[in-house]
Image (cartoon, rainbow, N blue to C red; front, side):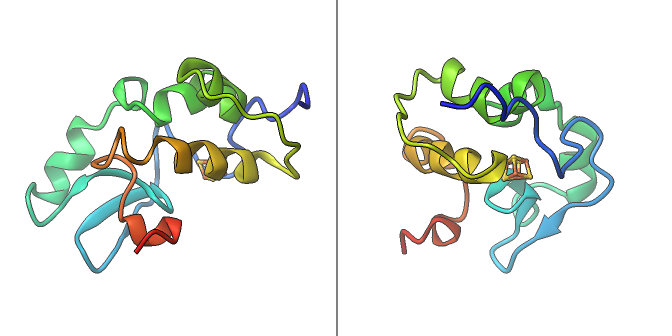
Amino acid sequence: MSEELKECPYEDLVNPTRVHVDSYGNVHVCQGISIGNCWETPLSDLIQTYDAQKHPICGPLVRGGPIRLIEEHNIDINSEYVDECHLCYAARLRLIDKYPDYLAPRRVYGLE
Ligand code: SF4
């Protein structure tokens, strides 16, 4: 496994300046990483209460990128990955049943 892949290269997960809202109401800080559903909770509340460090997926990513994500969740991944996002996605796919509210919708992961 590479010693790299220690930070998220594309998203500011601590202070996101944009989010994506899908057709189910899920609010994404990166595709497939949800901070809540704006059909259930007002978007302004989701933004104001979001704390990356307390989010089970964003927290590890902020602390040390996709490598930290697999370390903190004890995911055994031995394959090689072409970049941060490839490993991040593979790790999230392994975590989706444990964190369905944070990794949504399943369709993003090709599971529906
Ligand atoms: S897939 Fe993961 S590593 Fe890539 S930009 Fe999104 S959160 Fe960051």
